[in-house]
Amino acid sequence: MVQIPNNAIRQVLFLLLILILAAVLFFQLQTFIPALLGAYTLYAILRRWMLLLHEKYKWKQGLAAATLMLSSFIIILLPIFLLANMMTSKISFAVQHSSQVLTAIQKFVHKYEIEYGIELMSQSNIAKLSAWGANSLPGLLGATISTITTIAVMYFILFFMLTQGRKMEAGFYEKVPLKDENVMLLRKELNSLVYSNALGIPLIAIIQGVVGLIGYLALGVKEPVFWFVVTCIAAMLPILGAALAYIPLALLFFANDDSTRGVLMLIFGFGIIGTVDNFFRFWLQKKIGDVHPLITIFGVIIGVNLFGFIGLIFGPILISLFLLLIRIYANEFGTSAKPK
Image 1 (tube, rainbow, N blue to C red):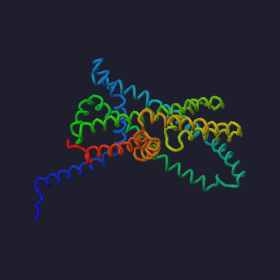
Image 2: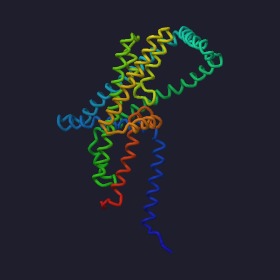
Image 3: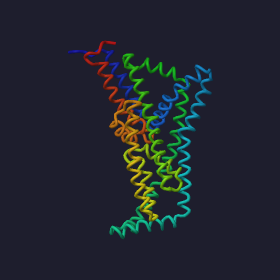
């Protein structure tokens, strides 16, 4: 009878204990995963500037980190808060003039009910819509509080990443049980993917917003700057993308009996704004990080479901990282791999 060595038993039990504790920590802290991913994204972008300020210009680490964090907040998050403020003002206006808004909606819907012989604004449908709104409001408020908490935790983690970046990277190289060449490959590819998504996706959204703004000005859209911001935000979302901006605009034109501009808005939206998205998204993603278009599309869908808004960046990274780990495994443990 073969006896299992005591050392092997201790090793298995110790690894089992580590896995159990890792599972407990993961399930307890999974709420903060988006904050951690967001912090790493900003760290990968700001690392070069942090080293420049601290090592070349001799800034104190805390001051350099605080300056970069404030700059990132102004550049990245301030526009989102401005959009939220603009949306809040419009929602407040709609609430204050709810009767006029409801009358306008009923008039618009009634026109198509007569034309197509359907009933949309029945009492039961209105009751269901009201119930849905009442049930959704607490969730919306909860999501807002959760987002603010995530941002606060993200910047808290980012501060330590920036001030202790060298030590963190040294620990990564030391503790990852892979060949040095594979560790370097992992770090290089991961940073490349972060750049590709963290810079590429917002840049494409801004390009779409600018193209959309030109069309909005040409068609005489009211508050074109507001719709420019809406287009930029919507362009980062999967599947529908910027259509979430120009389709409602077209419907507003139709509601005001301006069918000509409504049709032109749809033609410009699908024909120009959508084409800009398809062309620049795939070209830029491929240029910066050599990311296949299918990885981008499916990655965004998966990422948003897993991580929320930050999943726009880390969804494609997750799929690319999976493929990269398969390459590293083949290099590390394949039949042609040499012992470390």
